[in-house]
Length: 405
Image 1 (cartoon, one colour):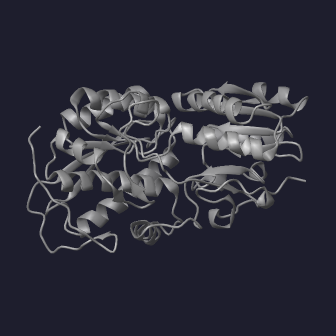
Image 2 (cartoon, helix red, strand yellow):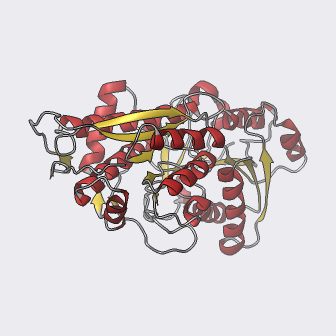
Image 3 (tube, one colour):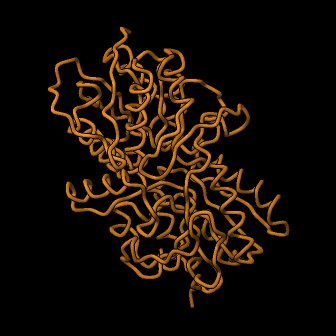
């Protein structure tokens, strides 16, 4: 792939400075793999697409990258690993992209990074949580999004704070779901000894989870942990409620997948979400850097919708690619990788830097991804009104947690 040299306009008050330069050079092509059709999570794909387009417009309106605009090239993976593999192959070999980003499902990301590694092309993992993505140790792969070990620690500490004795998790049959379910068990064993924990693996494409749910009626757990993406997650929550398993005065629901801020959440879930605790990567009461405020405002102006975590994660993924090109003054893979490894840059959620430690989940991971816990306290409740029960960097505040009566 030929090398092209660009620079990014400097930041002014945290935002890209505007430039009057025309787009004279060839565009910088960035490949995007997302689910735009079932069985993948289409709502997630839409949120990622929105975030990338908001970021691209901010960059391009500011004069692009040293006079060259960002061009996004999309491929639909349907959340299927084989299609993700083919998508990355096509983007690299046919479209000649300088980097790939956008992926939001771990199984698809795991397939895609194999191709990016083979062709030695930078890959910014937007939302694949599986620790295995990091454990591969591929120098091309960078992770500015969340990771399973972070969630597992949060879940274990929350179960301990709740005083739970019996916890059951339902996870989807993917690398993400099963991987997180196992990690939660390990963290509970380490941090919350005395809790009985087990998990059930469910087919994410199924519409009937009753065989797994009905046995809980005789001995309901203290907490059901949901580790699934839509639409399976919505079906599970509704069937738990219909069968009287959860939410009840006995059994709470903990959403480990952070689905309560999805735009179609309340279209698919009603009373089933009452008093559900949610692992959150964004809440409107969280403080944001200037760039985060700009992205949020631009997104709301464009869609009339409220900001969400995937908006910021996707925007940061593209901004990081642009920042790497600026720092490296090159689109060569080695130059971009070196720039990303040394980066300390304030994005939409905080200062991003990547760990160089080659052990477990840490390699090329932004370790300090901010997170919170919030609680749904009313049906059709906007995220802004959901109760924040754990602030970033603070322990869960049990005095704020409401129980189902």
